[in-house]
Amino acid sequence: MSTQPIHIQAGFTEGEKPAFFVRFSPADAVPRAHVIYLPPFTEEMNRCRAIAAGQARQFARQGMSCTLLDFHGTGESPGETTDATLPIWYNNISEIYDSLVNEAHVPVHLWGCRLGALIAANYLTNRAITCDALLMWQPIAAGKPYATQVYRQRLAALIERGGAAETTTTIRERLANDEVVEIGGYSLGGPLMLAIDELDMASISRAPAKRVFWLEHSSDGDLLPNPRSAKAISHLSNLGAETKHIAFTGAPIWQLHERATCDSLLEQTEALPL
Image 1 (cartoon, rainbow, N blue to C red):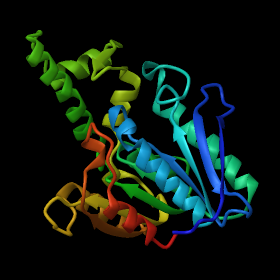
Image 2 (image 1 turned 30 degrees about the vertical axis):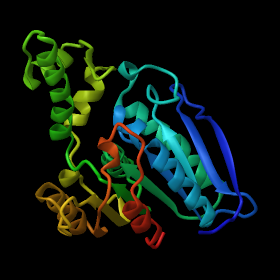
Image 3 (image 1 turned 90 degrees about the vertical axis):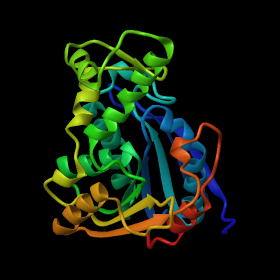
């Protein structure tokens, strides 16, 4: 591993709904590329924070700058989760992206983990930007099944406490009626959650990047993508993106409450031609 010294900078974007970021970059050189990290959502964000910071340092040692972003209303950013919307989050990305493009004429890569990967692909498509590479760690292929899994956490908690019965349908109805729904200690609002329902990697209209690296966990050593991932990967390839599925093994860090690492994921990431 390189011992190149790195510089660490923390700050906030300058928009009306600012976001906190931490940037790791080579201390004594102009970066050969920029990487912007878009995190997972709710507790998955916290579980992946340490490994993402470690990977950001490694990118800096490899001569790239890496900016870790906390979307507005999440993590260390101001605001509440109920204030968050996809347009606000897209603006957070743009504020970082545009500043990096203006800083140096080097490639810009987006790196998304879980929901952050799905948001990255849709952001690039909606803004008609084709970045050089899109790196995705265990990406969410479609928003609605993911949101349903989030809601089931509430249903399980209600059953455990003997609370009033709900369904994922009634939760979505409450969100559509501008109610706030508490799930796992997070207050979730309709504008964000119902917009996540509409995100689908297999239905975006243009290639989000020239190259897409789809890193997906395999618990049994199977090197093939799951069916939903395979559909999305095929769609991205048909849009013209050079899409590569890469299986990794080890700890599913986004699921674990205790701090963990995943050497296979880090090794596969380090081997990528970024």
